[in-house]
Length: 443
Image 1 (cartoon, rainbow, N blue to C red):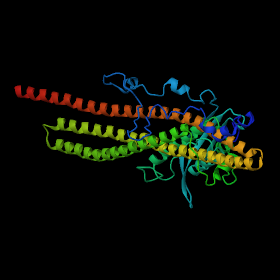
Image 2 (image 1 turned 180 degrees about the vertical axis):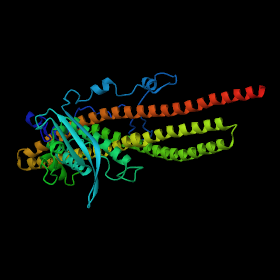
Image 3 (image 1 turned 45 degrees about the horizontal axis):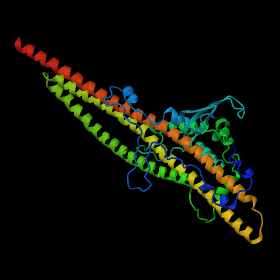
Image 4 (image 1 turned 90 degrees about the horizontal axis):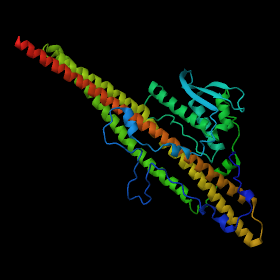
């Protein structure tokens, strides 16, 4: 589907003026904000996330049993509602990996290897391997946003600011960014419209990316969106798109709260880890001066060391896996709101032109201008593309948060199992010591 292609609406004949004036208040069913967030329009009750429901009351013994106890909302029935499922051919595969640091007299930067495998005829070769830096990814996203204004463009990671990371050339920063760039490119390559964009083709295949020249794909839809509405105030956003906006506001609030709490937990874990290391060192030094208590004291020191390692793994998972996903969806929300604003601008342009045409027709009986029909087609194009991308985004979100929450459960269970096993081994050691002491006293 091309960006500016009418949805067969203009060719269906001229509609009555009353229907043209209010085309978006017709009998379309409003889209539900989604099954995993409860939206309260009045704002009196706090909305809640219901990502999983326990079906048993017994305690899980392992991560796999916990997974079996949760019935997450990304079941087969929900995924079947994805409008793109049957359309995807999976004939374009991309991977971002192998970061390399480049140092010159002018600048220092990181490039990433972008590998592509495809059977599409738009590509001259079945495989490509090129190196791209962050600003190349940024160029691609801007071009996609300009040439496909009716679609949701996946977000890129922020250029400089990443919470908890100061050095943008550190191994942790580069690894986190590489994962985010890989996810961005995979989302674009899996999209049934964006994946056919010629800018993406150039990004994946060209050895030297000519970003200044570009491909000049800015369509009439994109051009008019930038110069639209001219001060005209939108009558009313349709109910289904109001529901989208309310959902995004609620979701953004929840993500912000979770992010703040997670940041506080990370800070407290870091402080606790510092104290815990000092705690273990004290027991080790004490064991050196108490021969009779050496084994129990060394046992305690060993348990503390094990707990430190387990806590480090838990904190690393939260900072490198949990928080980046939250941040990605915060950026996703902004992208979705941006598309909603463009849709509203397109509707405002249509309503303004229609009202002006009606006034002219009443005065001199001139026919309805063709521009009005084009604007109507544009609005319908926006509506259809946005609703399809919304459903796709909801499906991706269910998958991402299932993986995120299941991974968090696995890491927490693993952490406490390591700590429990360490302290249980200490109990065995103390019991053996007590038996030895009793035997020596008897002898």
